[in-house]
Image (cartoon, rainbow, N blue to C red):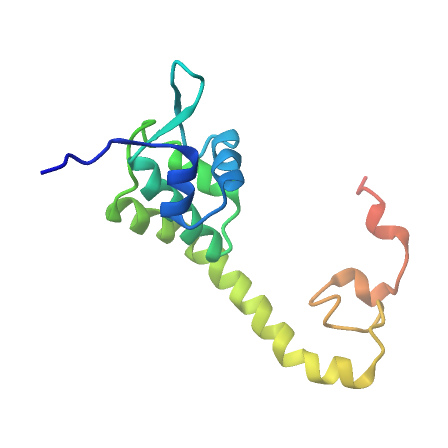
Length: 149
C-alpha cells in the first residue's frame, strides 16, 4: 500500500489542476496559494492547494475577480482547503453581484437587435452604451471627467 504524497511540485499541481505552471506561480504571487521551498529551492505545494485552485477556477468562471476570491481565501490558513460550507458562504456573498451582471447582460442581449439594426451607437441616444445614464440625456462631452463641487 502506498501513502499519498502530501506535497506536489509546480508541474504536478498544474497537471492535476488542469492549469498551466505559470498560472500556479501567478496564483502564488497573488497570495491565493502557498508553497514551501526545498533545500534545492524548488517549490512544493501541499495537497490542499489542489482544492484551492479548484475553488479559484470555479469562482473565476462565475466572474468573481481574483481580489474578491483572495478575501475569501484569506480566512483560511496556509494549508487549509476550502470546504463545501465555505463555498456556500462565499457564493451567498456573491449572489447580488452575479445577479446584477446577469441583468446587465440580459438588457444588452435584448437591446442588441435594435441598436445594431439602427447602427447609430450614438453616445447621446444609444441605450446600449448608456443604459440608464443620466448624463446621456445631456449628450456627449467631457463632463464625465468633471468632479462634483
